Amino acid sequence: HDPPPWWQRATGYQIYPRSFCDSNGDGIGDIPGILSRLDHLAELGIGFVWLSPVYRSPMADNGYDISDYRDVAPEFGTLADLDRLIAAARERDIGIVMDLVVNHTSDRHAWFEAARSARDHRLRDFYIWRDPAPDGGPPDTRQSYFGGPAWEWDAGSGQYYFHLFAKEQPDLNWRNPELRAAIHDMMRWWLDRGIAGFRMDVIDLIGKDVDAGLIEEGPFLHHYLQEMHRAVLAGRDVLSVGESWNATTDTALLYSGRTRGELSMIFQFEQVTRFWDPALGKWKPRRMDLPALKEVFFRWQAALAQDGWNALFWGNHDLPRAVSRHGCDGVHRVASAKTLATVLHTMRGTPFVYQGDEIGMTNARFTRIEQFRDVETLNHHALEVARGMDPAAFIAGANANGRDNGRTPMQWTAGKNAGFTSGTPWIGVNPNHAEINVADQARDEGSVLAHHRRLIALRKSHPVLVEGSFTPHLAEHPQIWAQERRLEGVRLVVLANFGCTDCALDLPPTLAIEGRCLLATHGARAALSGRVTLAPWESVVILSG
Ligand code: TEU
Ligand code: CA
Image (cartoon, rainbow, N blue to C red; front, side, top):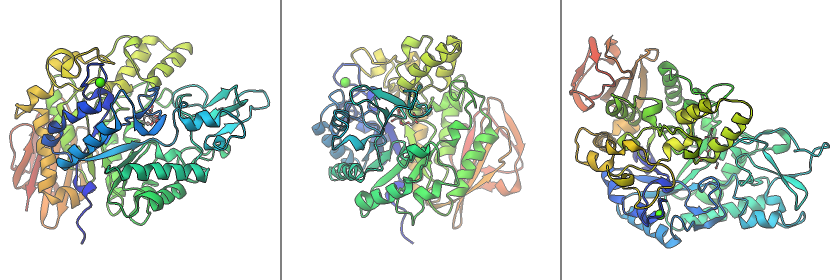
């Protein structure tokens, strides 16, 4: 049978450029800064980088509001810098996957400025305009994800325009074939520059039928994705990973099934939204429940066992830090960061490492709203406090689940500003960079970084990790995470303690194994059977056959 495609064998690494490495002292990460850190990525062993947007942007949403798809934001550098990065990364066998943000543009994009200039402008229909409701207000009650109505009044042209995110991010009208052709053209232009594919921002929203109120996974979605595949992706050996906050195990294969002609894979977010408060969403954190968390991952493993492909992640630039959300960011921080990575990287799918998680970076724990930067957090803070929410309660919610947690500067050293910048960082550096940084961990065989290097290397030397089947075990156990991979005669068993206390258990015979210890957070174990006691956050990977 055919060997798995490169993007099923590789491990991805997400860079949020604003927070990765600043080369010119303006406190903002940039592309030359990334170039200066390519050895770190090569030593980690990753096969591609998902680069969050570096396009020209007014930065209302840190680059997810694009004003020119074919140019680089001056804060991040130049197009020549990006071409240099693509070439230098390729020399290290690392592909650059760009972030495709096409549900919306910036309100400063030339298309939107033309569209709003006149009701009958040729580009008017690139966006979604509606007359006021009879009472003069917004056409409907739809709210944006970033708080407030999803309709913004444009006095100049006397209509409202639709925006699911900030008012600076007008939604594109994908019903317009001319718009779709312009997007396809831009995508081909980037692929011809040598990028390795696209991560597709909120791609599940482009199929919307606004008048019918069908927004998420809308009626035209798969038509547009199949058209995009035919026009741009077909015949190219590139990765396409869609971000879909609304995909379920019932809809996943519509995006990534091998005969669908759409995408390579999608990021699902059931693992996130299942643990939000029904009324206050992310702003009221709920305790993690391990059986419920395992149920999501194990169900997705089963759903894509024969077709499609999982994109595996704990963190990204929209989420709290993995070790704070799912692990222990106190005394067992190192062991829990390693164990979270161990269970993720030994599942079936492509693992994505979010910048900083390879060293076990933690949440920021800001105390004042002035320390936050994220437009979503700041907008919701204003709204919730105006509605009477206790500001301290909001800050607690933002500290638990806010997006700034993943955006504090990458911690390179224990020195000033964690070695991120020689200037004033755009957002506070976590004081714990003194204990958590790349420099210290690069020379510590017991570090979270060393563990990630080993994990990523395992995937390259053991086909069972890429092609093997997945079998969950002990799904109901409140503290143990256990899973098994099999390929031909080879078995790989992962046993992990997701708790801060010792955990003793009688191993089911189906899980017992005698073989070779590939990876361990505590002492090596070459066999598991009968009564086993795991130390807090201890995990082990054993191979037999
Ligand atoms: O995020 C999609 C998105 O919906 C999340 O921001 C989510 O709504 C929110 O965190 C839930 O509270 C993508 C990008 O990843 C994000 O950074 C952008 O802000 C957003 O789209 C708009 O482009
Ligand atoms: Ca800079």
